[in-house]
Length: 323
Image (cartoon, rainbow, N blue to C red; front, side, top):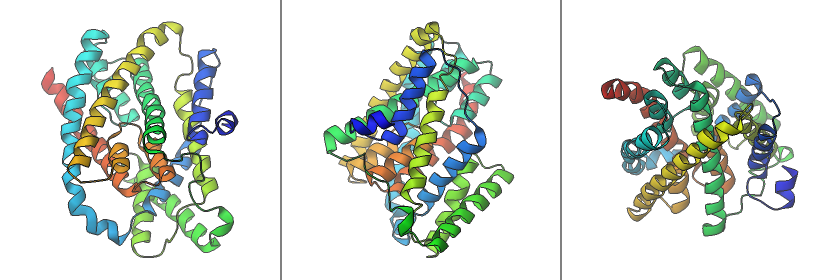
């Protein structure tokens, strides 16, 4: 992180620890993440996204629906291009290739893929590589093509936020997380707090996002989690799985660029929002980018939630049909 900050590279709190863990994994060091801490950091992001919901956003939902209709087409294109590449060119078995080609939630794709007879290790590394590539390429595009500063603080410091607002946001995060987990909502640690904070924001109770320090801490630990997934990787896996994942990530990036351009040309969203909405990274990582880049956070996250819901509900059905 310090090296990224000294070099003025984008998203130092996210990409710094990510690449440090990747380098450590390639050096043979064993690492592991701690789920309670990771979920807590995702809860911070959920509250930050929920606090971005405003009455003006609700009024914009009809216009947003037009670009949301492109999400199923994006997933069809991603599957139609990714599955043959992973199956025929890279040589993965049918279940591994199919569930690796689906840009959905990592845990859900691992579960479905393993149940279908896929290789969980390959699935984990392929999805981690997709996220790694997207969170590396997209910031570079935003900085080089659009001149967006991704090194600044992602909000107001804690000293400028009223203690009452801090207490309300903490309560919204904890209650939303526990309720969502109790009812079995996917991505409970981020979606539950997002829903709770969103409701309070629309009611005018929450009037600010979490402090910059909390969001930076979330970036740091989520970056660690992505990098830690490479723990124990062998050079044989690097040659086959990591390289295959980079190729697949580039295919997805190209498809995402096409759909983002369609959204921009149809005047459905500005370029920044369109790029982040269709970039097939992880939910948490894309939320961080939207917050730091100053994008319409709610617009971006609604598209990613839609993508993940479609993948989770439809992928097992499509795989059974293909078999």
